[in-house]
Image 1: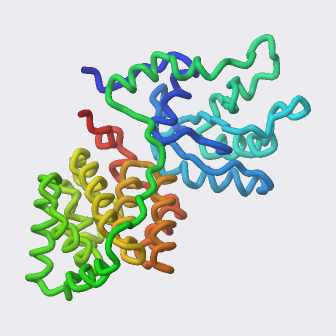
Image 2 (image 1 turned 45 degrees about the horizontal axis):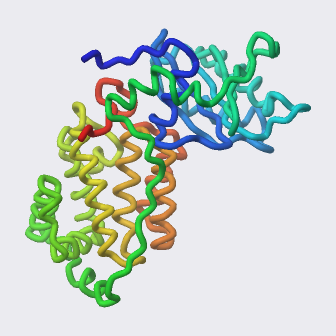
Length: 336
């Protein structure tokens, strides 16, 4: 099967965005880079509201510059701030963005606005030329059908379930927290590897042991790095998104599923490491918006949790993982 999907109209492109981000954006600017006629990276940021147009535009372009192959860009504005007297909200911000993109040699090729009821070309001012289109044109597009056929699902953000177990589990997990000796690290990594290979075999006892292993910072970092089998041995490089070949994305999906299962057995106040793992894997997939939410949940779970703060800083600096920048290595959902 051809790995590329041919998008022939704007509805196809608009259908791709929720699949790429994992959810339907709201009150957002979404910018997609292009390399010739091929789509590249996708960036979602909150709509500017009262933000300074030039500063807002420069921030977006600084993130988009991570795609060194970009030769152009597309913009989609998701908003319900339009009205009969304001048919093109955020126009000053779009003008500033267009100027900054042209300076960065990735000019704006086209733009659309999507509301709760319809979509249309944002740059066109002639209603007779570019009338409002129904949202059904997006969901019934050939591009959306092809994405679904290939196994992509727009599942939305998944919040962890609240802990409903026995309060004594907290001490059990604490008792399983290793001190970081080599033998303990090796045991934790072996249990984690077994779970990644066969998630169905994860027992309640092993779940508590793994939850305890994740409480130790060094052990936690090793366990996170072990998810990526195509990365350097130094887990610092792995955590920064350095990979040598296409990741085993099915293994990544399993790691996230196991982390959610671990949290079912882990009370609040001990969940931050697993939330960081989930968010970091979302970042590797190129879903920075989801990653940011999980890092925020981690810092809510444990005040100022250091790993969550550091990973959030990666997002704030616009750092993109190797595998998210390279189409040949980028994430595709597991088809079951």
